[in-house]
Each structure stands twice: as structure tokens, then as C-alpha cells.
Length: 322
Image (cartoon, rainbow, N blue to C red; front, side):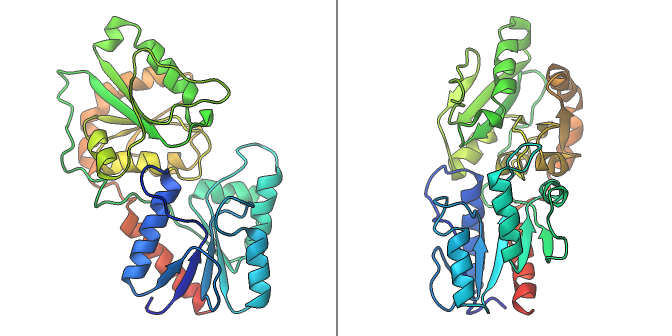
């Protein structure tokens, strides 16, 4: 069905640890090319489809204006806009306005979570535009429960998070608070915390006293390190559908997730414990008690890359037929 289809995807794939967006690109390109499609990262002639990932100038290999000009020259080429981010505010600022404008240019729109779809509907998205929600998924060939070390309650509960971005919105305040809790020897006997990735640096550089820090990892090295822990923690705010907590969950780790986590809430519900900024410490002890009950469920965590890219393929083929 994909044989001969030519698709432009607006980012270059990077090697090494480059965040969740890069993982989406890799899964997309691998799946479509294995089915006979050709995936490029620039706007060449005779494309069947353009998948716009970020419409902002300088953010990828092509932006909104590039796609607009291409569509005018090639009106039969279909445009899909993948909406994966917001201004993370209660008002409509420049980036959100550009995304809504990009939706109007597109033949169809993919939102990466119900939360991000509803966010843009509240801000004026025209629901008559064909659209679908396709959540992210982690590569199950890498992120899977094989080799995961189940907690036996005689040791401290090992909790881990990982972030490529150094933005403090990734949860720096909660991670620092956790680090401070571990000043208490009694807490240290019960919990350990590991932070993998770039340390948050804005508005101030985060420094840990009791947290094990590991520089950015990717692929099998990252999965192997995650599996040495028991629970995954995400305190990232208002993300569309962050890949990091999906990678942890696919490795078998129940998730502690903040109620401000945007798409993380719908993705992790039933596979961990939700907390607020004020109830984080309580949630740690809830996990101690409820951890073993999550174990059978974690092996059924559904958000993997194969499911994700198959949904993209079905949607893209349906748009091409119109």
C-alpha cells in the first residue's frame, strides 16, 4: 500500500540522544521505508505528501512559509500537520497562532494527544478539518520489560527520570524537591533518585546533592539504565505527549506523573500514580504500597512505536485517497 509513496518529513534525523521528537522521526522513516515508501527531509518535486512537524522558521528543514509556497506550486500534494506542542499558557501567543494557521493550510491534522487536541479546539481549531489523535509510542525493540529488575521491597525503591531538554518546565522544581527530601537519612533508606540527561539550566542551573546524575543516553544504553530502576518519574508540565515517560513505562516501570503533565495524564492513567506539586511526597509512599499491583499491568502498556506508525500509515493512506 505504501509502495512508491513519496513523503517529506520536516526534520533531519540525529544520531544519539536528541529527545522524543527524534525518536518519532526514526520510527516513522523506518516503518514507511520498509513498506516501500520514500521519506525525505526536504521539499523536492513530485511529493505525494508533506508532513509538517514544526511550522516555525529555522526549527526544521522547512517551515510554514516553505510549505505554503510548495502547496501553491503543487496543489495535488497533500499536507498533514502533526501538532505536538503548545505555548504552554492560558493565552494565544505567537507560536499557537502559527500552529492554528498551519492547521488551516493542512489537508489533515494529527494531534499527539486528546489533551493537545482539546487545547487547540478551545483556541479556535476548525473541527471541520479532517483530524485524528495518534499518541506517541516508544520503540518496543529497545524499550521493553526484558531485563527489568522488579523491586523486592528489601532495597530502596529506585526512581528515575530522563530529559534531553534543559528547560526547567521539564519538572526541575519537583526533582529538586525530591533531592531535598533525600537529605533525610530515613528517606534515603527507602528511595533513590537518578536523573539522566541534560540538567535544567533556566532560569537557574539545577544542582543535586543526593541524586545520581548520568549524562544523556539513547537507544539500548538508555533502556538498559532505565531497567535498573523500579519506578519512572515525570514532572514535566503541559507536554503534548512526551516520549520519556512512554519509554519508562514500556520498560516495565510504573509511572509517577504530575497532574499538570498534559498528555502524560491520559497516557499513564492506570499505569502509575498521579500527583500534584503539594502531594508529591505522599505519592512516593503510595507507590511503595501499590508498586507490586502495577507489575502485571505494565506488561500490557500499549503505547509502542509499531502501533503509532501503523496508525499514521492508515491515516496517511486515507488522506491520499481523497
